Length: 325
Ligand code: NAP
Picture (cartoon, rainbow, N blue to C red):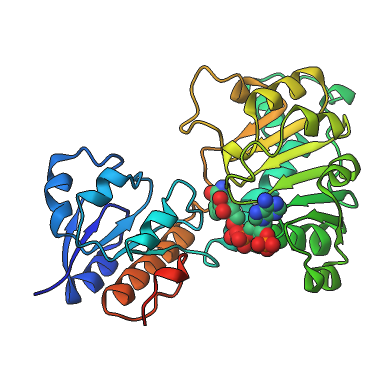
């Protein structure tokens, strides 16, 4: 009997064909909640799930007693009950590496856009307000040669810092759980405590994962430490930042501008003041959203689930403790 996979992420025809060769595959394109009756009916016989955005609840796991593996099409796995999956012997696989450079590109796009007021000035031209040479009221701040403070210095953090150090002649500071001597060597990066980084950096970019420790890591106290000229960029997860405190800091001029790809609530509520603030560049969680990278992420997830259900170690396994070779 072939094992069954429920696919609710965006997979190409070739990727579905790859799964079809070895498994029975049922697709649920665009599924965001497990309430879908067809999905609920399919869960009891499912061995694998592949997709993103679906909350994996204990109820869902209870309805899927045959589940062996979940392949999320994302590197972040906040919201996944990792300990519970491990307890049940269910492998959790993610998609690191293949999205690192694209997400770093997005981070740098936000750094440049927020510093140089790209969106605000483009809107100014679009509205027909460009009637004379622009003056100080439209000036931005430099990126090259500034001090970049990375909060989180893993794969994506290092890739953003590499762009800054090598492309823009920036000095790099970082605060991270562990020291990164190889990156210090490569980029001349200097480790700082969280608070001294916030006080010293001109541009602050957040790339830590969302965990119990990092939830609301940046709030009023932290914004208070930043320079009034600071540019703040978040490409990690919205809940790493207390959004109300960020709004207050921008309103008070405690920081100059923000580039945000992620928000506490997604999609962002139309009531949120953030996208209406001229000093904010807001993106719809588009960090990895290119044709090439989303395809590579889906391929990684397909390879992960295939290997997991065939008894081979998945390429990217989150919960090593659940792996029984
Ligand atoms: P990663 O390689 O695991 O890097 C995360 C870094 O954060 C690691 O260096 C880790 O330290 C550090 N860290 C973890 N907890 C910390 C804490 N409490 N205090 C200080 N540092 C801490 O992950 P990645 O691939 O760079 O991805 C990072 C995050 O970016 C993902 O988890 C995801 O949430 C987010 N992301 C967003 C998008 C988007 O579309 N905007 C796309 C991709 C990823 P150690 O090295 O010491 O473990």
